Structures are given as C-alpha cells and as structure tokens.
Image (cartoon, rainbow, N blue to C red):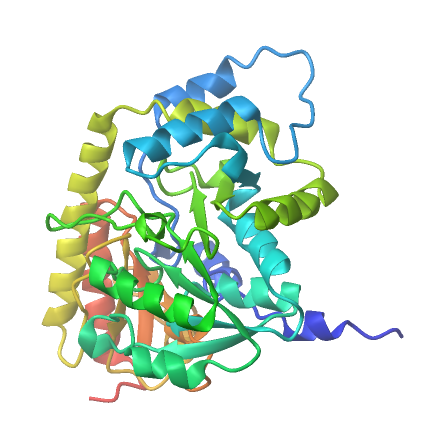
Amino acid sequence: MPSISRKGHLMPESPIRKLVPYADKAKARGTKVYHLNIGQPDIETPAVALNAIRNFDMKVIAYSHSAGILSYRKKLAEYYKSVGIEVSPDEIIIGAGASEAILFTMQTCLDPGDEIIIPEPFYANYIGFAVNAGVEINPISSSIESGFALPPIADFEKAITPRTKAILICNPNNPTGYLYSKEELEVLRELVLKYDLYLIADEVYREFTYDGLKHESVMHLKGLEQHIIMIDSVSKRYSACGVRVGNLVTKNKEILATALKFAQARLSPPTLGQVAAEAAVDTPPSYFKMVLDEYLQRRNLVVEEINKIPGAFCPNPKGAFYVVARLPIDDADKFCRWLLEDFSFENQTVMLAPATGFYATKGKGLNEVRISYVLKVEDLAGSMKVLREALRVYPGRTL
C-alpha cells in the first residue's frame, strides 16, 4: 500500500477539536457538556451581516476577484482608517479566514526549511500552517507567572539563526489573552530591523481589550513598512466564524504580488462570506460596547473562580476571550479526556483544550489548559462549579 506523505505524518491533531468524539459520547449518555474548548462565541452575529445574506439578489453566486471583492476591500480600508491604520484597497488580500491569509503569508515569505520564531504558547493551528508551508517553528517560551508577557529580547536573539526569516505574534493573544504593549512592540521593531526579518502579526482580536487598555497595531510601527504583514478576520469581531473570511494587509508590493499568485491558485475567497463581511463593517458601536461588557463579566468570573481552586492559578488577561490556567493535574491531555469519558457532576462535565497543543516545545503545558469564556455568565458559573468538583476527585491530582 502507498505510504502517507511526510507532511501528513507531521500534521498534528487539533488540541481544540481532537476530543470531540469523547464529547459526543458524553452527550449520547445524557451528560451536559460545557464547551470551553473552542473560540466559538455565543454572541449573535450583527443583524446587518445576516440581512445582507438574506437580501442577496444576484442570479449567480460567482467567483470573486482572487484578492477579494473590491467594494469589500474599499470598505475594509475605511474600517482600518477608523482605527488609525492607513491602507489602500490594493494593500489588502482577502482569504478564506485568517487561516488562509496566514498560510499565504508563510508561503510567500519563507522557503521550506526556513524558520519562524513564535512566542509560546501560541495558536495551535500555526503548527499546521507551518507544516503545510514546510516552515520550521522556533518557539520561545513565555511564562504564566508574567501573564505570558513578551519573552526577553535576549531569548529572541539566542533563537535567531541564518535560517530565521520571520517573527509571528498574536495580539491580543490566543490562547493566553495577553495584550502586547506599545513598548513590547517597539522591542520587536528594533529586532526586526537589526536582523532584517518579517514581522507577522495576527490581530484578529483587536476589538477585545479590557481595563481601559487599547490595542496597538504593528501597522503603527515606523520604518517597518516593508517588513510587516498584518493578519485579520471577521470571525471573532462580528461573531461570524462560519463565513470564513479573513485577510492580510501589507505595504510591501512584492509580498502582495506574490501572495496574489497563491490566491489565484485557489481561485477566490467565499463570495457570500464577503457579502456578509462587507455589510458587517457597518455594525454600530453599540454592538461592540455590549459585547465588551459581556466578555468583561465572563473574564472576571472565570479568573476569580479558577483562582479560588486550591492549587490552581490563572493570570488576568487583558484581551481576547481566553485564559490559560495552571491546574493541579499530572497531564492535561489525560485530564481533559477523563472529564469527558469518566467524570460527571450532577450529570454535567466540561470540555477544555489541553495547553500541550499550544506549545511547540515537548513537555510544556502539561499542567495547563486553555479556557474560552464564550458562554453566557450563568453557564460559565455552572462550568466552574463542575471544574472545581472534577479537580477535587481527579485521580491524577498533584496537590
């Protein structure tokens, strides 16, 4: 029988989705499962986006331009201007979600065998994108004690080799919720200039910042116009994950021309998704105020309840809608599976994402989990009660 490709063997399972069969079996047994494993908001998608799909009246759902519908790119440029980012429509390429935009970026900027530095823990699918592009990830660990702040510049310089071509950050961060400061971005600016690297910034959680803090975009950094690629998406901003529309933004014309060739090879991004995304740009500010107020309550509840659990620790994130918590457990993968296979409290259990899948360094994250606080406050309160009871009786408890 022919063998599976090397890439196929290297491609990891999703730490977010690999436990789904166990959750399905738990539900089949009649157990209620609180889904804290995936960043799928329960917030309603804005009405303007839904209405645009309902009122779609073209006779043919045709291919769009490979870079994306021009009217949408013009609308996006207006949106970016509203947050202090000056770009033109021809400096934007639309992808099937931020996922495709990141893959285009890796394929455009790095050759197979080149290295990309990413502070860990990081969004688990970066590993899959890197495998797909033949790129090697060189991780630098951040620590839960610092709330997962940017690692020291010395750690970056130790990691840089002749094969290093880029640094990738997520700001605000998935999975940690950490919000990089202007000062931290300036540190990266100096590093990128010193070693002539690309700086790729995944900024899909831009709108979700708390405690009076504001998001600082890499597009605001001076002197890096030819080095920066910003990644964005409508999935979380408008609670529209299923439309599969994201984009890359750069001032570098060579990157744009090259990424467009990859975009042409897959023909076009989703037409109906772009119709919804274009309309969503007109979402009123009141929507975001409501969303932020809701997420703030959720964050406060989760952080407070986890830190009440003996032996557990959870930093207070300033952005996105995730926390990485340290729990008194022997093995996060085993614990998360045990929750679904062997545990229930009042006929309920919780589904978490083991943090091991968010690290590239083997052995990291063994006692950490990622929690997405995307459920309503009442359900989060119930899930924290279940988690507390689970940790009380878990056979692999370490404290």
